[in-house]
Length: 597
Image (cartoon, rainbow, N blue to C red):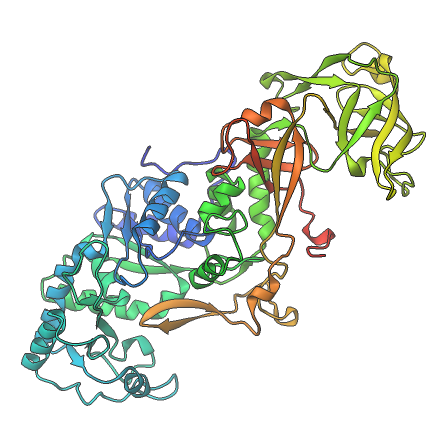
């Protein structure tokens, strides 16, 4: 795999403020011509489409400027992290077309250095061990309008702090008994500078370091130092970390002043995270969907995870195109799901060959076609790419057609089969409806037609018979059964859990909150987002497909004519037992049909 960022032939790279910043830094020689970025996920879940924007941005900016991008796992919280998540993250980044080469790192690689730096800050009077309870610390921290107050343990001596910190590391104290805090500014209007905690006690084994540590560093302390140790030049984060930038700068500046970090130091820049309508992208909520059985796992094709999108049929190219189209800005905004869907349509329109599938079959009998006879019709593999050739599809007296291609009492403008009306069987003959069979409940079980043998497509003069209707079909003796899964949007509401009269499509109703000292993005909701799950988000039908489709390899994509783009399921499809997932319809019909019964 090349380390260069892949490009789509139909993607035009546009300028943005980050590209401009890097261009100016290269012009002035700020980092001696180096461009080093990083993608630093926490391995506590599967990556989603929001992460894809960050991946494309960080790897793309580095590649565009002859630099490198590091993949670094922020593995500082062993309670939530797992090797399974690390493996899924690496697979997702590679699937998108990017490569970190030799630059794979873990925050845990730096635990010894981070501990050494913490001891330095204690000795310098810039950090202290606080023995207050979490409730007391929260109370003393103040509010947005009131300054914080000093902990009774803030003025402990350096010697006492060093001793307590050593004993914390050696496992002498239970979880929550003490934390190590930086000594910055309790009166700062920025809450992040009011003596933030940087180490906590955790009596739990780490998936990489085992039982070596009983204290683990927190994100705000670890992230900036990791950037500096790796000589990152441009540390690109989402907007919720904007208020954390002064803390980022304070930590690495203090350590650089002591000669412990090399200058020039990295600089943090923030961009608006991706907010996508009709889904959720909080890891906590995605985990709830998985653990609650609302979806069929992290790779459920309804999920916004990259594993789910891949299984749905999305291509890496379509996601990279999406990341480029939505752009990079400093203002939060909501992106409609249709933008992502259009990117997939644009990509698959050129690359996906065409095939026939009948999803809701009813039998069509051609009464005047010779019994037992059959012939081949030749269908183009791609109507706009004749170089892809044609394929032979069997034709016989009995065919499968779509049930809604017949209507006994057709509405105005209906040009498909109805009593006495003619249609063309696509790439075959013109037929005329002469009747229908029904069961005891009045349900149509077969449609009867006659055909005109002089109207076979492709023969001289065949097209002189002009009919408005054109329907697809499959030969009953030759068609193969297949499971087809019709996936739709995961939620019926644009912003799940938010009342419709409060939905604002221009700004994101979210805020950064601190949970267990980790930054978590919480959507501001008024009710349970699960109430907005789409009950028709997954429908499974027993369909008929062309004979060759039953043997296709997993992840092979096709356009099923009239139905949309489909992919052979990467997990469940196998030769002889095809399972197809609908990736996207041929056009956006979401606003023109009911999403729920």
